[in-house]
Length: 247
Image (cartoon, rainbow, N blue to C red; front, side):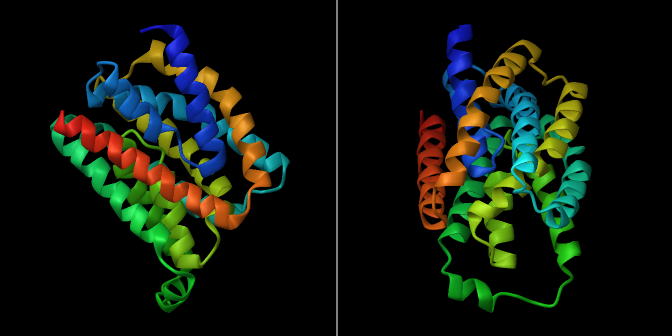
């Protein structure tokens, strides 16, 4: 595959990672499928590039004092454990099931993102915050990396929904989570034969440029604009994946 194309997608994925706290898989997986990779190999490429974008994005967020470590540490611990199972999940399931699961995750996340603030407050309960954050990280780690996404599509709306925090403020937490989930997931995928080192490295290296741009953009936009942008992202990803399945 042309290095220039991989570079462009890497930069674009990095921008998405910096703005939305996602690993970039929402762009990389559909793009790699479009260019002829099956979904399992597309997932392998996506997981590897996420390591680059999430590490650099987290460094920038820590430098800017934007990371809430009290939330991030529990989510990351769950993700590290959950993502270890991702290679086995990818190996066990047929591609069509992974694609359908990808779409269902997007629909779920879109619904959570559209919930009104008043509705969010009414959903709160007495379950310990630390336990909920760990479980969110664990479940996201299993399914997100298995689908080639970092987990931001699930983490951001889930934590915003439970803790009633604007999605923009969850982005640094999500990127921190992706470090652990993508590293654990890449190892698990490699063990099961789904690592594409060349493509993954190229996309990952160029994603660093995009992450820098994305984090700068995230600082300047409002919470409302960010929420609306997340909604648009979900709709675009849904359209692309549904088109891939139909065709």
